[in-house]
Image (cartoon, rainbow, N blue to C red; front, side):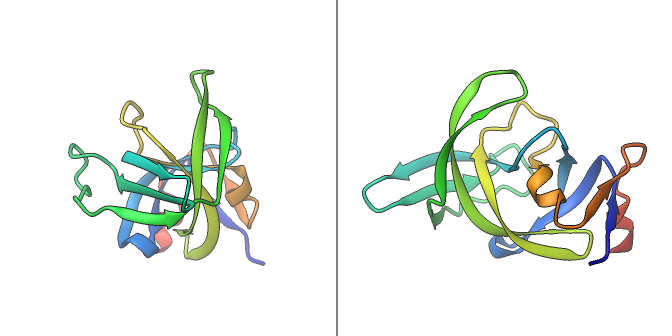
Amino acid sequence: METVIVGNIEHASLPDFGFFDIDAKIDTGADSCSIHCNEIRIDQENGIVHFKLFDNFHPDYSEKEIMLPIFRIKKVKSSNGKVQERVFVKTHVALGGKTYLTSVSLADRKEMKYPMLIGRKFLAKGYLVDVSVKYQASKKD
């Protein structure tokens, strides 16, 4: 398996949703990946979550509602130290020329600078982080 060097900020894609080159923070302190969503509605009875990616202030926002099976619901400690219950879904994430099916939490990240966060579990699939650069792997796409 070839190791891909990534910077602290990269372009990641969510090909299942048709979203490409999303600014993503590479965060080795985070366990999992997270994507900015709004209008998150959980249908517990059917095990489905409804959501919209981003919000109407983000350039990639569309009114399209996405429905996916709930992979799991888990308590997550956010960067501000607050514990939140979050819904996780399975989707493909592409980074540095590689694409993997992974779990992603749906979160309100509108206060954050980057709409997506790539965590340790994803990075363990063959990535090495060089915190001194940005968009290192994106240069090769």
